[in-house]
Every structure is written in structure tokens, then in C-alpha cells.
Length: 119
Length: 110
Image (cartoon, rainbow over all chains, first blue to last red; front, side, top):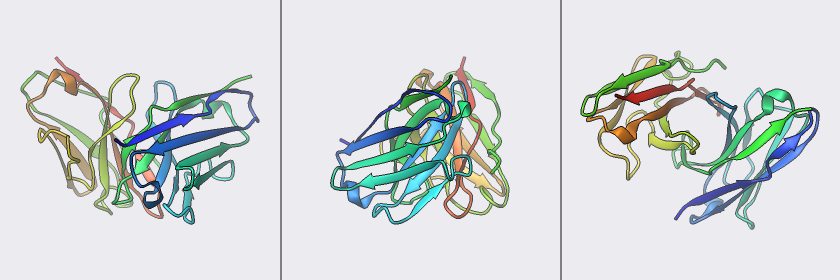
């Protein structure tokens, strides 16, 4: 069974940093791209970042470019999101998702980890 | 990148059909056959319902179907059931690996 489990969320002050982790299981991790998507309270979904199966190809949404860094460790079946210079508007539930074979959709999602940015 | 435009809400009675539209531009929906749809129940993670405009993942009932015409994609749910109630989001590739997601549509089963 495919499973994706996020961790690392919490409360942080504006300007602070946080590192999210996503542990995957139930599939051959090093053959799938992964992504992060967030959802602000009461709002819609927002794609944030993509990392290819090898980790060599990475993309970011403009809203987080230069502040967030995605990475992966295929030996640990994990993907990470380093979030720096956090702002109030980064408050959201952060989801880790497996990218489907077609590369342009998310076929499995974790339950999310909540990040609250507040002074 | 502007979000795709979806109706805020739609509703239907059990057994009826509903259509949720997703309006974009030639730079996203109209330019690529990479539209996906997600269902989200309150407090839960999104679930993939349709990908590549009209393909259904295994396990998704064939009551769910997707289509596209020009810059507008649509999700049709036939034979509406109570468990279909929730939020639905469309998502489109919009070039150089950017994925644009709609604002979401709340489906109410009357």
C-alpha cells in the first residue's frame, strides 16, 4: 500500500525557518517524482515545488522561490522542504504528494502537516 | 500565475448529474492535455479523480468523467451520491513545470 507521511510542522515566528519531512513507503521511491502542495486555512490548494526521481530537476512556484528548498534522499525514501524567511501568509497545511507517471498530476497524498507562522 | 476559475458551489440531488467547470487560458488548460481533478472531504487529504483531462485512476467510479473544450475543462459526476459531497479542485500544467490549481468548488448533495 502506498503511504506518504509528513512531519515537521509547528509554530514559528515570522522570519523563522522550518524543515518538513515526508516519508514514503509501498512503492519504488527512486522511480517517482514528488511534490509539495499547501492549503491555507479555508482556502484552496497551491502547488509549491517539484523534485524529479533523481533529484536533479527541481521547480518552485513563484510564491516560494528563493525561500523554500526541496530535496530528497532516495536511500531514506524521504523528501524534504526547507522553509526559510517564513511569512504570515505561509500559514497552511502542507501536503506531500507523489507525482504520477504522467508527471503532471498527484496520485497519492499524505495527510498533511500544519505550519503556523505567527508572532 | 492566476488560479483557474471554478464556480464557488454547485449542487444536485441524488441520482442527478452535475458538471463542474474549470476555466483557464491558452497558456494552461487550452494549451495542454494535462488537466487533473481532485476531491477533498473536510479535514482530509485531496484524492485524485481524473488526470490527463479524462483518464480515471483505478478505484474511481466511472460516474466521474472529465473533458475539455478550448480553455475550459469540465468534471461531470453522474448518478450523484451522498458521498460525492465535498470540495473539488481542477489543476492544469501551465508550462515549464508550473501547476496552476483552481479555487475549488463546493459540491452539495441535496
